[in-house]
Length: 180
Image 1 (cartoon, one colour):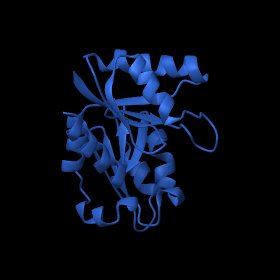
Image 2 (tube, one colour):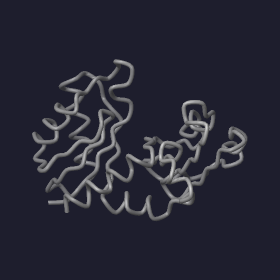
Image 3 (cartoon, helix red, strand yellow):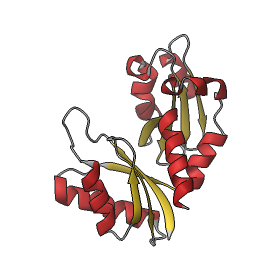
Image 4 (spheres, helix red, strand yellow):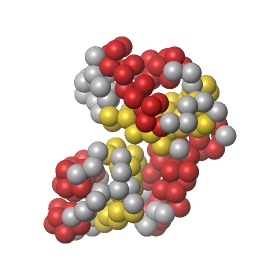
């Protein structure tokens, strides 16, 4: 059995794309997963599955949710090493004391041509960002809800992504370590 972390984007937001975590657990169970754990209501799951092909597992999850709930969510599949690497490479370690201001966006792949100048033009005075491979780090002391950079990073980079705050990233790592 292999440990996976599934990050679903855009579910349970404003009554749209509702997927109770209890139902996500059922979907994962139906796909042969074991030791399924979810974290908060925004689509975070840590589980074990014998499938070695991430893409096949991801496709199965999306298909099952579409069949059950009528929408096809963006799902990003990670392995514990991906979370561990994101934590280890954090360029803004001093911001960890305020975990709600520090975010990691996990990208489906590293952007081929990242237009960092365009991203810089969207920054507020105290915002900082750093792109390392397929992880985009954003320190937004005034909050991501007010950040033009946060709102446009996916469009500028041209790669699907999903964002988690530092507290969630660390919790997912704890869960993944416990599942091993």
